[in-house]
Amino acid sequence: MAHASGETCPDYTMESRNDKTITNEREGLNSPERPENQQLVISPVPIQTARAFIAWAQPHLALPAGTAFALGVQTGDGTLAGVMLIGWPTAWAFDDGDTAEVLALATDGTSDASGVLLGAVWPLVREMGYRRLIAYTRIDDPGTDLWDAGFRILPRPIGWHTGSRAGDVTRVLWAIRHAGGRR
Image (cartoon, rainbow, N blue to C red; front, top):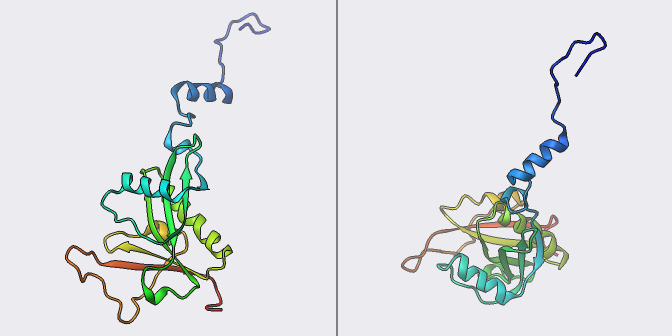
């Protein structure tokens, strides 16, 4: 590059945003295959598909009966990353017609999949007329995604006991409820 005085100066070029984008794409940093770049989408899934996914992702989990519906979360390319089964409460103390229960939740490890499912299910069941949604976690599970979705720990109802069978693990009861209590 020559100045008006005739001197030559080194060519200083600044990297434009487009050059950086192209470099990132070349290196795969903007690729939809990268987990942090994937858009997660909620969709209904057939109950049998959800059951098969749970059996694959968490083979130790016993599949519950009485499922009302299933939700799935998919990545931007349509890959199923997680499922949730919703139904009526398994404990008679909560089977009041106002309460639904998260019966099972399983993911393939995709970041935020369980949080996205939990965040989507409460508005959906509330729209269906339920006033409370409950879920259980193992005592050793911190329940971070439940907490982030608005669930809170509930004390155990009178007469409710867990751990009565060999191999049972103590469970924590979580709930989210519509303001205003019962109808």
